[in-house]
Image (cartoon, rainbow, N blue to C red; front, side):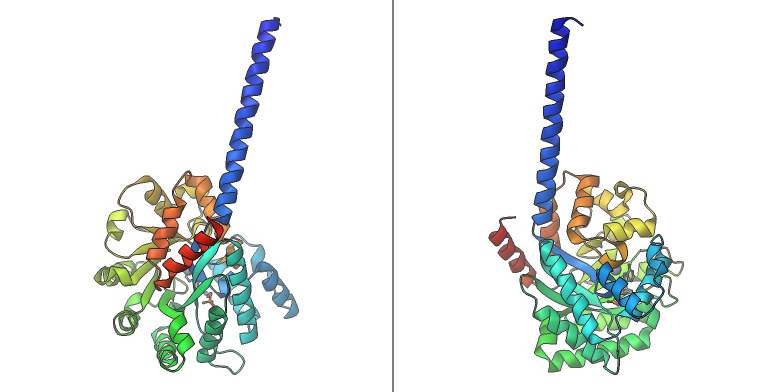
Length: 357
Ligand code: IMP
Ligand code: ZN
């Protein structure tokens, strides 16, 4: 090879190496910034957010078969895992432990404000009201993060059970100042293939929204149903959009969602599993949000970190990898604006001022 060719080749190799190094450095800086940035979590189920190590330990201590944890996360497998978790989380002391551990994990991920949701259960002679009181105490004692509670209505338990739970919560809100301050909304969740449609619960959500003045977070469009359930949920939300947020809302176009809810709670890992997506780039809501104009605001959430092996910072990184560069600060601001407690904005400002991210 001619000496001038050797020199040219050497210069090209040096240029390429510098470009690769700059790319790696930029990527490392972006990832560090996203890990540390101030975040808001609006869609996380308490029992689904159990630490995997805690779940494995509790299952082993109780001699329970945990083989479902090794299976691919289909909707069916997820609900098998919830059943296992519920067998393991069999006392209010353990409920308190998993709540504290999750708050710790969120804080480490840069979360300034969380709305945790959970279905009250009567455990070991204690009542559903005791469950709500326990969770509210733990959330009210959290430091370095502001935590609020959404009471979950599990559609598979049916409307009578939901009415009973909500009557107890209403009574508690009147008699316990901490519960009154911490409970900021009601969630509609549970196995979306359950026979019970939203119409059986609609009067309860109307009461929560209009009499209690609290927010409604409704799971909708996770999986197709043939009974017009989604249309009923969308119609309910359209009445007072600012009081309603949607979880997932995977099965709709932007046009169908317009004017319905203040925000969509997108849960990348959970949605990718339910939709069996090979790549997050194909996530319908995230794609519309980042590629089209006029798409409803969305929040990036975890759903069930213990089931999907994900984390809040990890979900932000996945979105960045699939759609970046995108404005994640705006995503956080949109989430803060749609929080059911206005104190979220202050929690976000405080953390941003303290950590400068
Ligand atoms: P818990 O309410 O704290 O016991 O959290 C677990 C429960 O949340 C599950 O049993 C379901 O009822 C509900 N849940 C968690 N993830 C989903 C979801 O993606 N769709 C519907 N319900 C869910
Ligand atoms: Zn959910």
